[in-house]
Length: 394
Image (cartoon, rainbow, N blue to C red; front, side, top):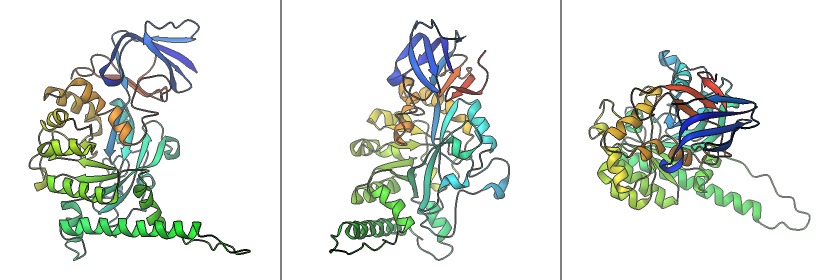
């Protein structure tokens, strides 16, 4: 199907705003976009004067579907407490696609979620990226592996310390991660040697014994996916950086609660971060320096950041309000919007498909009935792959 939306104010890449914009959508992708673009020959045209269009809103770090809303312990599948090292676990396998949070996300203009395992383990498992439309996981998923979740600080200590099992300290957390990465690197060297050693005449190469856990870690060591490190305190952030540099990994710091205290350090290291949940309570020591002014300090230093809800820690639909609150606290509107569009798309390696309004991209967008930075504006229509999943085109 080919159709057009007209009369929009479109918030495109890098703060560019296109007035009186028409967006042509064909077979789930943006075909054309421009001011006063001709719609001659297009069979369906929907006039949306007064509305604003943004790229579909993206939360790169949440737990929707693995910690289900309103069902308690039986719906908690985000942590496997059996072992501090569980790289083999995939968030995708624990997602309940009818979790009501998916519906809440759609109502809030959200089109893609990065769904992560929890932070009980030093290595928690593989982060998946899913569209919010539909209820068949295989049809919603964009990628089942957009990063490997690991956790520094209080959480692994709190889980394994009472069991008398390493890690019981921050030193132990870093050591467990190092040991896992070292073993995977040695495994990769052994595998490469096995597969490249020249064979003698008439000799057949024996099968190599594959270790799935280590294969998952090899993708991080090869920088095919980033290490996504849960770290609140500045010391934990620096430990994550230290380990990543030792092994030559791509790193994303998640939560980054005290990141504003070392913003220049993060900028110098060129490390992207995902901050949040914002504007919440401080139930543990690691959160004592949380502030709504943190995003402003990160922008000032030149740190590239996305914003997360960590849902269900915070309501998934609150992400747009977090953008507005960041602007209220001094973040530029273009950087605040990028924090839920282009930056999370890039962090998840999906910027060729989502996060921007331009030809060739998936037709994922949020259409607001007013200025998206105004708290009084609501999401009128959410499109996923050009299909309304909230509201109606009429």
